[in-house]
Length: 216
Length: 169
Image (cartoon, rainbow over all chains, first blue to last red; front, side):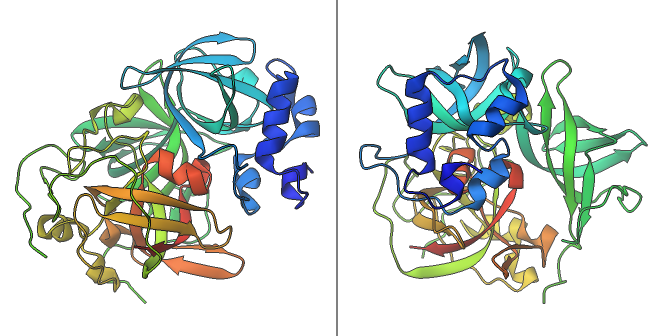
């Protein structure tokens, strides 16, 4: 278990900063090295109370955009509004891409959200990176065994069912792999991973509600 | 509070545009309040000129929404907004807060908080009545606020999708 999850005074940010300054990059090093130094699962990383930031860090810094290049543990990111950022992935970085994973899974062309600590060299030492993650309010338009057809605003999205991953939560109940109760026309919140190659979405969790009038 | 909603502009729930009592929303940081306003579930959404399916999300009901800013969508940003989100159908009679309103959103258990500016209309509370998020044995029910990725990630992980929160103004 890493320091920031145990209540140790060395909080997540200080740990992260130290990791970045040490150059503890984990790209290509795999799960074992990352696990030894920090949480891989963003959910677990955020489960513990976040302490106030280091006084030297006024705010968490957030980066959003497409990855245009990868150089070791450094991601070049072109922001959606013309900005440019460099995001450093360290041993303390939690990486999500469909599931908790390692930096090896990150590819050029992926979309990214990252939060972390600004470093003196202008990079962002990321404590969490979410790759291609989307959270969309959709309407179910079609249901097949291996995919859903979804409407997001005026756009059609194909959602791929992943046999070992996709779950559905019906009316707030525990997630299940059973998609049989989905219905055409239902509002569905989709947590998934965008697939840049064909603009589809890999479905992680689909949430459908009972609709209006079912309040307690 | 005057309702100056007009049916112009692109947004994720259709064509609704919202203006607040102090005019168009802005992205500047403002002081967060400490007066309890509401509690419930927070979700996250993307807006602005973002990548992937969010590319067409637009600037939201206030026209200023960006995923990278500390912003939020409120279900009662205007009457037109309310007519879409209908939190009252889930038992939530949320007060009107228009574009530019500032709120502090605090994770119920971790205590992490973020100051956000209302910049869109949402979430569509009525579609998920009774849905709840829990931590430490306490649950918050019904979707009452949507946060941008920048704001949501300041208090939790985007991969959870929802968080139990307490909202101040």
